[in-house]
Image (cartoon, rainbow, N blue to C red):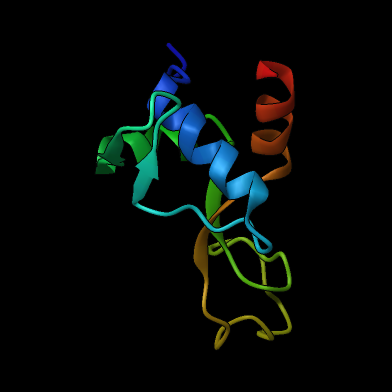
Amino acid sequence: MAPRLTPKRLAALRLAAAHPKGNISSLIMTVTGEKSWLKASDEIALEESGFADSIDDCGHIQGAADPEREHRSHPHFFRITDAGRQAVADAG
C-alpha cells in the first residue's frame, strides 16, 4: 500500500514548492494556520512516494550513482522532487 498524501504532508510540499531550493522544513503551517511538525514517518512516506528525497544543489539524490565522486562532498538536504511538485499542482 502506497503512503497517503495527508493534509500535513501536502502542506509541507506546498511550502517546499514555494521555497527557492525546494527545501522541506520540519516545522510547517497547515492550511488552517496551525503549526505542525513533520514526523520521521511523514518524511519516510514522502520519500517512499517519490515526493521528496535527500538532494544536493546539483540535483543529485544521495545514494544514487556517482561514478566521478563529484557529489561526495556536497551537502544534501531534504527537498521536494519533480513528482512532489506535480502532486502539489494536482492538488490545486
